[in-house]
Image (tube, rainbow, N blue to C red; front, side):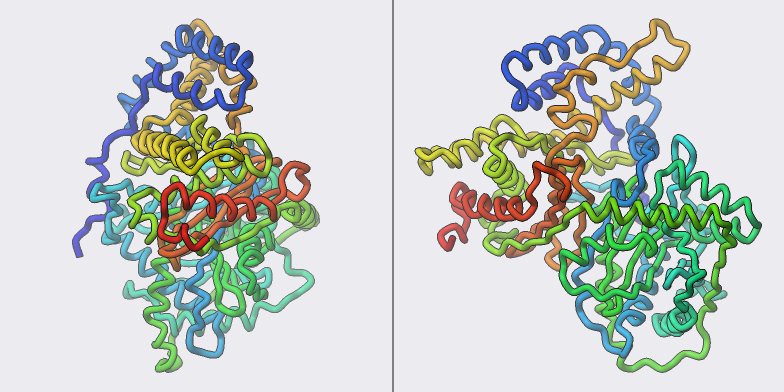
Amino acid sequence: MTRETFQQQSQLPSLPVPQLEQTIDKYLDAVRAFLSPEEFRVTEQIARHFERHEAPRLQAALVNKAATERNWLENWWDDVYLDGRYPLLPWSNFAGINPRTKRKLPGDSPQLNYAADMIHHCMRYWLELRRETVPLAKNRGAPLDMNQVYRLFNATRMPCRKKDRLVHYFRTDEEGHTPSHVIVLCRGHFWHLETMSSDGQIYSPEQFMQSLQLIRRNSVVQKDVHHICSLTTMNRDEWAEMRERLVSQSPENARCMELIESSVMIVSLTDVEITDDSELMRYSLLGDPRVQWADKSINVHVQLDGQSTVNCDHSNIDAIALLQFMDTAAQGAIADADHWRRTTTPTNFPNAIELVFAVDSVITDAIARAEAAFYQTCNDVDVRIFHYSHMGNNDFRKAKIYGDTVVQLSLQLAYYRLHNRPAPTYETSSTRKFFHGRTETVRSCTQEAINFAKTMLGPTSTLADKRRACKLAYDTHNRLMAEASNGQGIDRHLLGLRRTAEELSKGGCSPKISEPAIFRDEAWKKSGGDGNFILSTSFLGYDSEGSFGYVVAMCKDGYGTFYKINDSSLTFTCTAYKSSSETRLAEWVESIRWSLDRISECFALPNSSKL
C-alpha cells in the first residue's frame, strides 16, 4: 500500500496570526450581549486602550514567533492542560460509548470475545499507522493534519510537580522501534500482553481470547490487591509525589510503571453490565477510579455483555481522532464476527505476565484518599443521553442547511427559555487544516442568536418575524464557524497575546508588561473567559452508529451539551452538577426538545408539519 498518512504534513499551511484590530472588534461584539450599556462602555475603553498601547508590542512578538514556528499555539495549548493541577477525572478527560458494541458477537463469553477482537483490530490500525498506510483525512478534498492520529498510541501524560509533560513512545517504522504490548486491567491486577509474534504478525482474536481467559481466571479479587490506578485520579502534584515514591521503592516498580506508560493502550475487563445508555455513559468517565489509567490516551473498558466505553487524556488528543479510531476498530470486529462460529482453539498464544507493585502504607493511604475524593466529586455530576427523532442529517441536506448551526441556535433558545438570560457558549471548531492544528472556540451566543430567542418566545411574533430573526442568527453563526476553522477566531489569538505578555514579563526585556487590563476586566469572565462558559458544546460527527461522548460541564452553574447528527435523528449527551442551584438538567433536556420542535418551522424542514 502507498505510504500516505503523513505525506501532506509538510504541505499544510502554518497557523496564521489574526489581525489585532479584527480580534478586538470581534471580542467587543462577543461580550456586548452580557453587559449593560455602561458596562460595555467601560469594557470598550479597556479593549481600545489595549489595542493602542500594550497589544501592538505583543502582536509583533507573536508574529515573530509565528515566522519561526509552523504552529505558534501548539506548546501553549498543551500547557493549558498540563499546567492544571486538578484531577483528570472528572475535570479534564474525555469519555464515550461505542453503540456498535451493543451487537452480540457469537460465542459464550461476549466480554472476552469482544475484547479479543478489539485488541486485534486496534493493533491492525496501529500497524497501519506504523507503516503510514492509514488513509489521509480530508475535508471537502483538502488534507487535514494527522498529528492527532500520530499521538493516539503509546502516549501518556506524566505527572510532574507544577506542570505535567506528555511522553510519546510511538514511532513509525521509518522512525524506529515502538512498544507493541497492551496492559490489561482486571479486578485490580495489571497484565502485560504482547500483541505481536516474533515474526512481526499480530496475534489473532482466537489467540488473544486464550490469553484473556487466563487473565480473567487468575485475576482473583483479593483484599490485599491495591488499586494503583486510583492514584492517577488525584490532584496532579499529589500523584506526582506518589509516582516518585512508587518508582523509587524498587526496580520492579519502576519497570512496571514504564511498561504501563509505554503501552499501546489500556484494556479493562470490568465486572459490570450496564444496559441504560445514560448510566453507561456516566460510567465511562465517572463510574470507577480503578478501571483506567487516567494519564493514558486510550483506555477501553469492556463490560460483561461486551459493550465498551472509552476514556482518554484530553491534553494529548481531541475527541474526534479517538472516536473515529474506535469506530474503525469496532467495525472491523463486527465485520469479522463470524470467525467465532468456526474457530478452533489455538495451541500457541501470547503469554500474559502480571505486573505487581510493591507498596507501603503511605501508598495505600493515598489510594484510599484518592478513591474517596473521586466518588465524592463524581457523584455530584449528572449525565443524560437523549435522542431527538424529528430531524436529522437527511432533512438538513434536503433543506441545504448546516445541521450544526440549527442545533446551536436551538441550544440558545433552550437556555433563554429556561433561564431567561443568555449563556456564554463555547463550541469547538476544528483547525486541522493547519499544521498541528487542534481547535478554536466559536462563541455561539451572539447578539443575533439572543434576538432570535427573544423573537421565538415573543407572544406577538409572526412566522415571518421568526424566520427573519433565525436567518440573521444562522448566517452569523456560519460566519463565525468559518472564521474560526480558518484560524481567524479570537480566543486562541487572545491566549497567544496573554502568554506573550507573560513571557515578556519574565524575560530580560524592558519595559516589563503586567497582565493587560482586558483580562482583568469583569467582561472577560462574564463572557466565558478563563473557563466560565455556561454552555460547553461540541458536534461529534455524522455516523449514525458511531461512538459519541462528553466532558463534564465547564463551570459549576453550567451545562455540557455534546451531540451527534444521525441520518434521521439527533443524539445528545448533557451534563450538569447536582449541587448547582442554577442548573436543572431534566428541564434542560426538555427545553432542548421544545426548541428543536419550534425551530423546524423557521427552516421549513420536511418533518416540521408532523410536530
